[in-house]
Structures are given as C-alpha cells and as structure tokens.
Length: 293
Ligand SMILES: NC(=O)C1=CN([C@@H]2O[C@H](COP(=O)(O)OP(=O)(O)OC[C@H]3O[C@@H](n4cnc5c(N)ncnc54)[C@H](OP(=O)(O)O)[C@@H]3O)[C@@H](O)[C@H]2O)C=CC1
Ligand SMILES: Nc1nc(=O)c2c([nH]1)NC[C@@H]1CN(c3ccc(C(=O)N[C@@H](CCC(=O)O)C(=O)O)cc3)C=[N+]21
Ligand SMILES: [Mg+2]
Image (cartoon, rainbow, N blue to C red; front, side):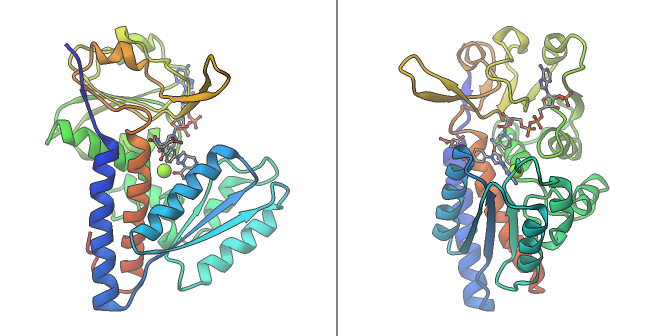
C-alpha cells in the first residue's frame, strides 16, 4: 500500500484564489483594500524566505503588503513602538511579527501589544481564549491549515482518535482545540510523554509538530492513518547544500499511512493562505463588514 499524498500546494493555491475574489469584492463594494504588515527582526535566512513569500502572495491576492525589517540588535521598546504605530494605522488590518525574536526581546510582551483585532497569527491571549471558549476568533494559521488538509481526506472528523505531538502555543495547543471542535478525541503528546511510539500508533489522525527531523518513524503509524506533518526542518545533504524535511520519516510513513502531507508542499503553503484569509477577515470586521470568506 502506498499513502495518498495530500497536496497542500494546490489546496493553498485554491484558497488564495478565494481570498483574491473576496478582496475584489471588498474593493469594489466597500472601497477597502486589506493591508498586512510583517515585521522581521534580524537576518534569519529561513525567516527572510517566508517573509518574501508572504509579501509576494499578499500582493498577488490584491492586498497591500508592508514589510518592516529591523536590525537584530533592535530593543524591545523600539519593536513595541513599531507595533503601536501599526495598531494605530488604519491601512494596516493585520500584523504579523515573525517569531522567534532575538533574545533581548520578550515575545510575550510583543504579542500582548498587538491589537487583538489585527492579530492575524491568532497568538494574542484574547484570541487564544476566544478559540478555547468557542467564541469567534482570529485562529492560528498553521492549525487551520492542518484541519483543512485533514478534511480533504475525511469530510467529517467526528469520533476520530487524533494524536497531536507537540504542545506549543502556536501549533500544538491550537490544533488540538480545533480538532476538539471537529469532534475528534484528542490527545496532546510532548517530550515527557511515556511510550510516544505507542501513543502515536493509536492515532487515526496524527499531527506532528515537534521540530525534530524525521523523528516519527513508519512503525509508529497505524496502518491507514492520516498523517499531517507540520515540521519544517533544514538538514544537510551530501553535497553540502540543505534540504527540507518534516518531523515524519516520509519514505517509511508512505508505506503505512493512508494519507500524508509532504514537506515541502504540505502544511507550509496552507499557513500563508490562511494568513491571507485572516487578513481579509480582520479587514472586514475592522470596517463593520460581515466577513465574506
Ligand atoms: N509548516 C508551517 O507552516 C509551520 C511549521 N512549523 C514547524 O513545526 C515544528 C514545531 O513548531 P513549534 O510548535 O513552533 O515548535 P516548539 O519547539 O515550540 O514546540 C515543539 C514541541 O515538540 C515537543 N517535543 C520536542 N521534542 C520532542 C520529543 N523528542 N518527543 C516528543 N515531543 C517533543 C516539545 O515538547 P515540550 O513542550 O515538552 O518541550 C514541544 O511541545 C517545527 O519544525 C517548526 O519549524 C512551525 C510553524 C509553522
Ligand atoms: N509569527 C509567526 N507566524 C508564523 O506563522 C510563523 C512564524 N512566526 N515563524 C516561523 C514559522 C514557520 N512558518 C512557515 C510558513 C510557511 C512555510 C512555507 O511556505 N513552506 C513551504 C516552502 C518552504 C521552502 O521551500 O522554504 C513548504 O513547506 O512547501 C514554512 C514555514 C510560519 N511561521
Ligand atoms: Mg502560524
């Protein structure tokens, strides 16, 4: 048996088309052009690639993109000043501060300063709390992308045993919340989980968000399970260059799983598409327009 490969690249492209149409409507009917501000502190090369991709796709969807590149030595107060300026700027509907931040900056303080209405990452405690209590919220992009991809395989996730490996605030916890809303039975595993392989083997739906290259082996996967690999890990190749791998040993998993997301081309492109969708939603709400996506 070989697993169905879930095409995140194509799914993301289709979602970006929907976003572009919504933007057209917003412009034509309301004179509103959504704007996304992305803040990058320092020179992290991987982050620079994401920022460039985001900026390009934002413009392709018809929105305005504002990029702020700050020196790696930027102080917390300087960054907070920029965030406050973006909060006050009506042309900016969404604010994303690329994480991780340099050590001298407290990322919790930065996230807390972003206007929750512009928090298109969904990281502010107001949005996390709204998601957790079932209120409308800006929901973190990567977790939404995971659920959309899982639902391409299973139109209804009700009753599925979902195992999430990883408990970060940006992926593990919110994806678990979303799966609970989809009526999955959810377990969150982490570095202190006993018999992680055994826990993973219970999963009908396995979400890997660990940040450890190819940690999840083929024999950790229940035959026929759906595997969503969030991991983005850069590893050295023989020729001295690098390649991207996920948190799942893909070639092994392909022989056991029923369906799997590749890396690249899986969850990553969905993250950006969902970010653009959140930006449209934020722009609608800030302008008193019923969300049109
Ligand atoms: N595709 C995309 O769009 C995105 C991809 N990513 C990628 O997803 C991965 C996870 O990101 P993120 O959540 O931010 O990472 P974090 O480092 O914040 O969290 C990693 C989680 O994995 C757990 N973990 C680490 N080692 C093990 C282990 N040996 N066994 C079991 N659990 C372990 C940690 O447990 P503990 O809490 O106990 O330390 C932690 O909860 C990374 O590869 C990242 O690059 C992230 C965001 C977006
Ligand atoms: N505030 C904040 N929000 C984030 O959402 C956030 C962040 N900080 N910091 C870093 C992580 C990582 N992340 C990715 C987004 C897209 C791809 C992506 O598009 N990947 C493509 C291409 C990868 C490539 O080839 O370089 C793919 O997987 O196919 C990857 C990773 C968002 N993150
Ligand atoms: Mg995200």
